[in-house]
Every structure is written in structure tokens, then in C-alpha cells.
Length: 446
Ligand code: RFL
Ligand code: PHB
Image (cartoon, rainbow, N blue to C red; front, side):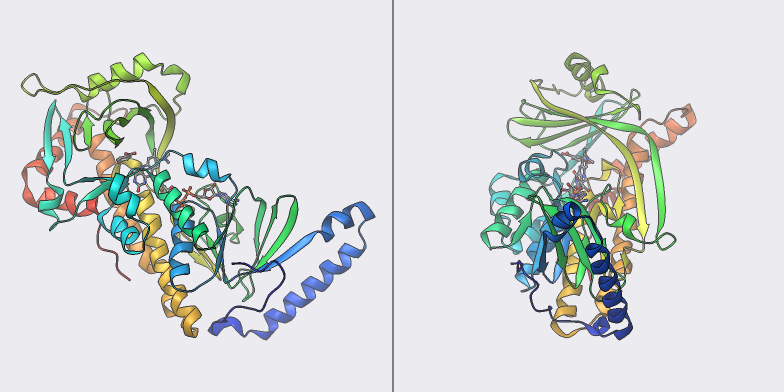
């Protein structure tokens, strides 16, 4: 729980005692206080309505990264406040990922938020690659030594985490505005924001930037500190959610001459599907009939293989660009970036949510040591440990993306190479094992 007035400072770590920084801060506050006195009365009235709070970890963003971090910290006895720009309803409905790696599902289960996932999620022990109209199953479980994936919507994970935080008396503030982070290069960072018309200043020991790709945390780092590595793919995904029973027990990734298609699901009566489209595609150019006709064509099987795609009313549709990006390092001072705030992966590998969870697992462990006895060694290694996994996942997602999609300008030679790669992955145990172990997710290590 946060305290609505400035409370006692949290336990401080080793780099907490830097006197010149405190002096600098005191001088800055004095200057600001003088400026406030000079303001006209109407601005003074607004500016004086500032509530102060304190917590150990200020978490910006209530997506999978921020909520999982808050949950793990709570279990370790560390206080946090989660600040979310959107409403609870919005974040609980936002339709996104659906595939949980073996270790993501295990972490949710082991930390007490996996009950509904275990009841409603669908465990898949294999995944299908379809090309030239033929389906090839990759035995994820057999090739990975017993691991599997769980198909369970990201918004369901988010709902479960929000419920767990609130039930435990945690603070998750929705609909916050004007979030800004300050002093992350000192031992006393602050986060300012407006909530229910009141300006707030949240003092903390650490800020976790879990605010996704369009957040405010990454831009708060001074120019020249971070380096970005980027790959923009020349296509986007049109995703739909349809009221139709899945036409396959396991996911189907299809390579077709008209472009990639993916058949996924959310429940025994809801199908989730994607089509490769132009990067600047507009939704209104895709009426229902066109979507179904394209899905029927791209997912069609060879005459020797019996398969039909069930259709139904389209409940939601959206277009997502395909890109990969990594920010290095994932930390500046006492600001730690996690999840999409630090990296984006093309969705073909189904990794974004999983990577967000993997990041905050490392961050939570580092913070636990920091708050226990000021040991900053794991925190200092946060970026290095995470980036090792991030680049593995970038490579896997790039590999899946290039293997499954059509690239404008590809010639017959490139296409033959792609087919050869698919043939190899589905015939060679060594190659299929590479896909399986990456798809179910590499073990979480510190
Ligand atoms: P999120 O989920 O974007 O959450 C960030 C949160 O921060 C809030 N926010 C702010 N709050 C306060 N102040 C501000 N100034 C703020 N600015 C932003 C936002 O409102 C939001 O609530 O990031 P996080 O937590 O890092 O989680 C990342 C995942 O959401 C993302 O990587 C995945 O959805 C990617 N992804 C997939 N990942 C998988 O692991 N498996 C999949 O099967 C999978 N499929 C997908 C995907 C993403 C997709 N889209 C739409 C991008 C399929 C699609 C189509
Ligand atoms: C999904 O079910 O939304 C999904 C599945 C696999 C992917 C991406 C998205 O690679």
C-alpha cells in the first residue's frame, strides 16, 4: 500500500548515500518552491493541490510486465504502486497475445495466479506448419523434453493479475494522466502524475518502466545513453476474433503464395486468426467476405488432406505492424525498462508477453536482493541477463517471420530456399528440436 502523505523512506541500498545528489535535489526543490510563490493566484491554487506518496517501486504501466512485477514484488514483501494511463476496463479487454510459454505458465501457476489459466487455458503439445497445402506437426512436447504451450488470452492473464493485486490490498491506479519520471539518476526518483484531478508526486527507490512501446519512460532517458536496434518488416498482420469453433486442435502457421496466415484460438467456440497484409493496409478495405475468402485460400489443404475452416461472425479486427526492436541497455540509473518498453518482437514467434514476464522475473529477483541488504550486483546485471534472452527471442521471431511470410520482390530462388527450410524443419529432428525448444521457451535463468 502506498501512504498518501510523505512516509518514511524505504530501505535504502548501497548507492543511496550520495550527499552531493541530496544537496542538488534540495537546491532544486527550493528553486521550485520559490517559483511557486511567484505564480499568479489561480495557478498557485492548482499547483498547491499536490499529494505526496511514497513506495519502494513505482511501476509505470499495468500490462503483463508491470502487473507481474508488482505481483512478484508483493510476494517478496516489497511495496509497489502501479500507475496505468488507461481504464481497468480497457486493459482487461485489450486483445493481444495468446500463447504462454511453458515457463510463463509455470511462473503464473507457482505464484498463485494460475488457477483460471489451468481451468480455461488450452495446453498444446504440438504446433502445425502448413506449406504447399500439406500440414506438418512439430511435436513440441516430445522434442523439448516434456514442455508445452498454453493458449490463454493476454487479457485473461491481465485480469487474473489485477484481481490478485487488488485482493492483496495492492495499489493499481487506473486512468492516470501526465505521468513523468524525475531524478532517476539520483537515489531519490520521483514520479509525477494526475489522478482524479489531483496532482501527485510519488517518491520511490526505483522506477520500473513497464509502459510499453509508446510510454514515457524510455524517452525520459537522456539522449545518447540508449541505443536502438530495429528491423521493420514490409508487411502487417490483420487479426480477427471470430465466433467460430477452432478448426484444428493446435495452431496452424501457413506459408502460402498469397502470404502468411495463422489459425489460433481462444476457447472451444472462439477462433483467433491472422493474415499477412500490406504494411499500410486499411481495415475498411477488408470486409468480412474478403477476410474469410483470403483465410480459406491461404489455409486450404492439398486435395489429399481433409480439412475445412469453420466461419462465423467476426467479433473484433485490427491491424498490427510487424517489427523488431531492442533498446540497449535496459536500464538508466534507477530506471529499469521491461517488456515492450525495452523491446518489440514480430508476433510470429508469439514471444512478446513471455519476454515481458521473463524481464520482470529478473528485475524482481534483483530488487529483492537490493531491498534485503543493499546488494546491487544482480540489478547491475539486469540488462545483460535480459538482453541475452531478448536477442535469442529476436532471432527466433525473425527466423519464423522470414520462413513463413512472402516478401515483396522475392524471386523464385528465394521461394525455393524458403520451402527447403520448411522441409528441413519438418523432416530433420535436429531442426524441429530447434523450433520446439524456442517455441516452448528457453528455461528462465538468472
Ligand atoms: P503493454 O501490454 O503494452 O503494457 C504497457 C501498459 O502501459 C500503459 N502505459 C502507460 N501507463 C501510464 N502512463 C503512461 N504514460 C503510459 N503509457 C503506456 C499502457 O496503457 C499499457 O497498459 O506492455 P508489456 O506489459 O510490456 O507487455 C507486452 C505485451 O503486451 C506484448 O509484447 C504482447 O502482446 C505481444 N504479442 C504476443 N506476445 C506473446 O508472448 N505471445 C503472443 O501470442 C503474442 N501475440 C502480440 C501478439 C501482440 C500483438 N499486438 C497487437 C501488438 C499478437 C498481437 C496481434
Ligand atoms: C494468438 O493466438 O494471438 C497468437 C498465436 C501465435 C502467434 C501470435 C499470436 O505467433
